[in-house]
Length: 171
Image (cartoon, rainbow, N blue to C red; front, side, top):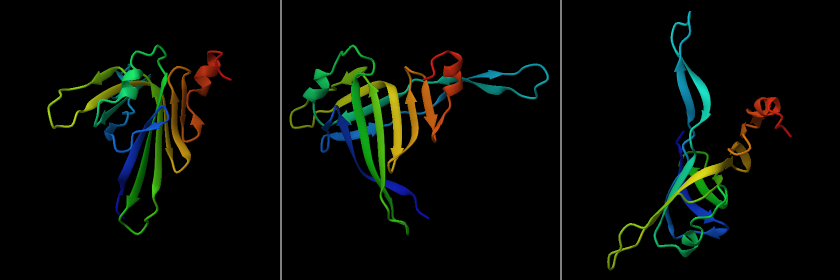
């Protein structure tokens, strides 16, 4: 059995495809915020779950992109929709192509325009803290996180439902 390899990808910002322009994309790290705790009678500390760390997306474009610049400074923390579409396939016996989609919302935190040199490609790096994250594989949502509403669904199970219900926020 051989691993599936990302064969190609596209980045779509507010409905505008960046095919041929997007060079690289760093997907968000999913990381729990934890604190070690060891109470009396315990043999060792446990890592208590205190929620999630900041979700952030980064990407590099091979140009100074006007559409990205026009979105600078928007007031809505979840005002920019960005999607990563990937196609992954193995060189092993199963040659089915996996369709990967990561949909996020946030706003630009940093637009790094680097330096400009004659006869060299200009690069624009963008950092985007997120308020929403959804990972879909072949049409099936595996993870959906809405930071503002407190929703965290993994494998179809809403892991925050009982907390939201206790707070009177469940729908």
